[in-house]
Figure 1 (cartoon, rainbow, N blue to C red):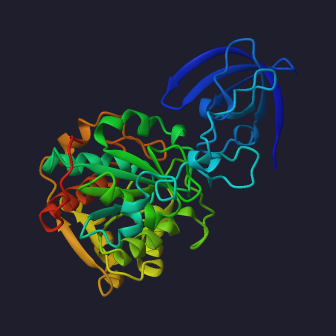
Figure 2 (cartoon, rainbow, N blue to C red):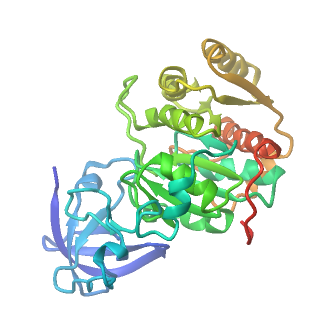
Length: 372
């Protein structure tokens, strides 16, 4: 449950799109690092009293390295501007029935300028969509896409298996120039567009953002329990089904590693094997990078053999991908390991991006102005 703390802002630290990091002096004399989302609670200043939810920080959870600001009780932000009809400002409620539920304008709801387009939209017309388990795969997938198709317009769909606010991700903040836009779907929020479901978010990527390629992955903070079914990445299989249902081309980014100390994640992670092998009912193109170490390559081949009846396993050359990964505008890191420490993981994600880029000729995009 919630572990509450009260304190005073001592200093502001880093700031990125949608988030402010602060130091807080607590009433018991200790200090705590906290994160505030100005869109929800206002912008904290030194001297402000803050109410914190400190549970994840006190428990030492992986990406929960912050207390979270629940309110600035002595300096509440003003109400947002209201339209003549309050529903014109949006009535899509996310993080529903929690104390900080935001009310947003959904790209697909009646008041949206895009409602008519999405009401008529039925399919993705062959849009390549890369599905990935972890948020850390996003910059590597982008590196692979832009290595072969520099002008490609890439949309990112933030699903709600990890961090709900898009603002939590410093990676996403730094990748803004690499993306045509972020669409937060389901209970996630804070993207350039808000969508009710992954299905409507995918249609918005195609018909509103005019993306050439889309990437679907959860935010930071993957949930896992060490069991076959108890992890947030099962949604990858559901994403494959959604993409196929809408007439897109699912491209599976596999979680491959020879560096993870946990046996269940070595070779092809059990997360990928369960999501693609048991949850995904539609056919996807699962990408394996060439050039893996022989022992790892043999392990990957053996793990994927049972999936070959349902999916298409694509071998993708990796020439130039290492250089593309090293040129990423954001540091590459997964589970605390950088590019050189877990090279196979990032190479597999980049190879999936490359394969999606090579499918572009099969997915002509409607005319749109602007660049990625």
